[in-house]
Image (spheres, rainbow, N blue to C red):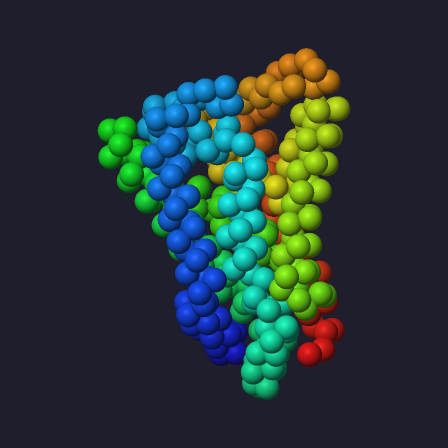
Length: 281
């Protein structure tokens, strides 16, 4: 455990000194400020509708905001912060410092994973709390903080999914630019596959839960709908040119997304560790 703690502390100190980490932090603050200022003023339009309720702007982002924005937020935040942890350190040779220490490779790998989860928790908390505060000041709506833990869990799981895939690609490719390119390509492919399947065949719990890489807001949306609706959720979507409505039990919707997220996250982490354990400098 001492080795694991040493890796976590080493990675945290390294991240806090990186210009890229500071740039990502600035981007998080920028997203938070923009969303909380723009959505109450301009969200009532063709693509989504702002509900001035206690759920405030996060409800809109979680349930109706376009996946391109939410997906890119997760890709940039989860991907950029994770690319340097393995691929970048292989690329510039700094990972040899950890290899020279009397610690196991699983401590190196999962120490990096735990440190990233801590970073994502901090970033998610800052994003959500800052956005809520600004939105409350702008719209005068008193936010309900009782659902904050659910949002934090949702965003941390989502960002960690990007990190896990980045670790898996980085352990195999060992080049930061190529790793991020592969991560971006995977996100584009999953987006296209998801919308093609849903447009052709309609909604299903399995399909909606599977492509977790492209939905930063899926799990928070599920939690919100469960807290808001309780019994069932009505989902309306376009299938082959016509609109169809699906009634789904809220508890089943949340459980399927949560189970799928954890399963995919575990799979990516274990595949990444297997590649990392067998890799050389």
